Image 1 (cartoon, one colour):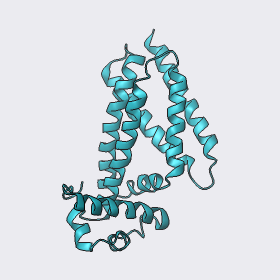
Image 2: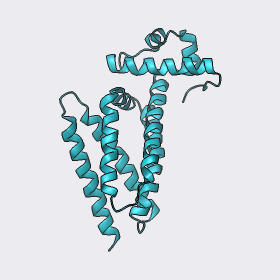
Image 3: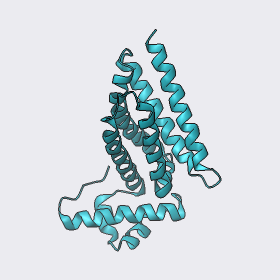
Length: 202
């Protein structure tokens, strides 16, 4: 996590500028060529200010990943109000479409996700972020499959989060047709949830 988070408006602007520049640079050059010096220059912020917030480029990427998951969790919270309902499948499809649009419009999401796989430390941080998101998903699963115990729902939520993120990042590869990948993702989710729901009624 960042060494410190800004509290004053001026510091917040610098913090946000550094993160915005980081996203742009990740998309352009990838994580291997990503450097703190270039980020600071692009953000027009002194390199000392960057290090005031972030120890290194790995911490920057972890913060970008946290921001992405917070945004998706907020979106999921809005969707949560529509579940359970007889029309939950339509709501789920709409939410997956919305997520896919986010990934298509903002290619930095995939670059951040790839960068998070770069070291054991970033992977561990990414797992913590995904676990927090999975907790939100578990609360949505509860009314859909109330007979399942909490441990099973927790596992399901973690599986869903990992699969959805992996497929969304797969869907925006240069050689991949996104619509086809998203359609397959919907089939995966539907088959998985339907099978578990039937199992829970036995």
